[in-house]
Image (cartoon, rainbow, N blue to C red; front, side):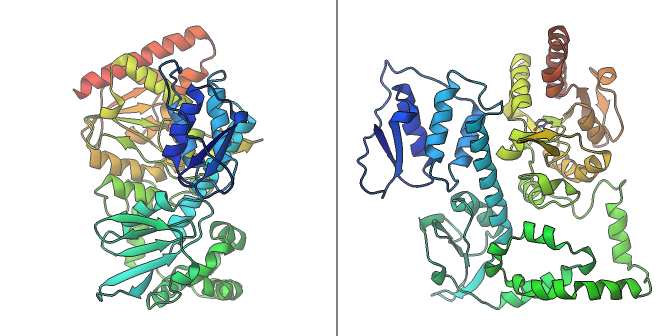
Amino acid sequence: MQVVRLASETDFAGWREAARSLRAHRIPPDETLWTVEGDDGLFAETPRAPTAEARPFRVPREFVELASAAILHRCDDRFALLYRILWRLEREPYVLRVADADGDKARDYARGVSKAVHKMKAFVRFREVAAEDDAEAYVAWFEPAHRVTEIVAPFFMGRFANMRFSLLTPDACAHWDLKDLVFTAGADPADAPKEDALEDYWRTYYASIFNPARLKVGAMQKEMPKRYWRNLPEARLIPDLIARAERRTTAMVARAPSTPSRRVMRAALRNSRDAPYDGQALTSLEAVMAGVHVCRRCDLWRDATQGVTGEGAPHARLMFVGEQPGDQEDLAGRPFVGPAGQMFDKALAEAGVPRERTYVTNAVKHFKHEPRGKRRIHKTPSTREVTACRWWLDNERRIVRPKVIVALGATAALSVTSKPVTVAKSRQQALQLSDHAQGVVTYHPSFLLRAPDPETKARAYAEFVQDLKFAWKLSG
Ligand code: URA
């Protein structure tokens, strides 16, 4: 039995190196035992470095992404599970694309981790503490469902760049001193303060945004589970707000209608279907990403793991717009990384378009789907959802300022051009768009995957490559 001892519960780099070496030496999963530094009684052999005879191998990017998320799950079998999948990928390269017990379990783990990330971003509350040099400092205590502190801390560093803080959890603590983000070992709840002057601000804010007429206790508890309440200053108000909701709603309904204020009218106008923008225009892709993570412009966020924004060269000349993230993209938080993404990458390579010099995004930022058994089946977003999400795409367009925008499929074309478009009739044309970019419309890569017969598929693929070449040249 080969025993591998990793440096910590979140040591992905160590797992990856050991797994690579084990597999190169053809040590099967059932002869491998994974432990973590500090586990007693097991003597670990350092996995041997690959030798010249050891066979080199490559794994798909989707596996690396899945593994780097799933490894943060609290289940003890995750290291072994991921090594088993890695092992199987050689003979069963499709293993992550089909319903499979190992693949499903790893995806479940990654989904759980992604939810834990989302909850941590939403429910951490910093409290002010007296620092030795009288400077302001803040401390928060949080118990994440999985070991996500190290990947969430940079989010708080970005959000509270001017605030010295320590984020304490039982697994690890993150400390930001305005210069460096440093991690230390896990802490105890007693290390974190319970109250500060900001609590009252939180409570006042929460009470003022609470709308009794829209109260849905089940949905509220699902979104804000009770286990997080003890760290939330506003949680103390919830039972009373719920108890009084019905009476307040009846009183609201009985009250004579009032004329909306000018401010409310202006906001309503901005939010109307035709208004492309609301609020202030965003000025950075980081702001778009932060906004998408908390977006409630339509209901798609409810069933999605996370919002997925675009990625690529921040001032790319060529922007690609797809429809919406798929199952894999929803888990990975990145556009076009699943099967459609692989088709897209292949065609880009054939057309000579370097993906890293482009910007790739979607018309809709959350995965719309319906459950079928254990699978999540893609559903086409409605015009209302596309319109609601256009705010984010418009911001991406304004910030990146591409010369050419390629709409991949009809939904993207609707979002990019603001009108219904027939893809087959609009190919190979340069359309003038409202922001002075030129638009190109082509097939969605999953159309190529779904083509009914090999001839249609080959023809559509060749046309797709031709369209990519056309757009690349136009952007040059
Ligand atoms: N399909 C899309 O339109 N976008 C993705 O990111 C993935 C699949």
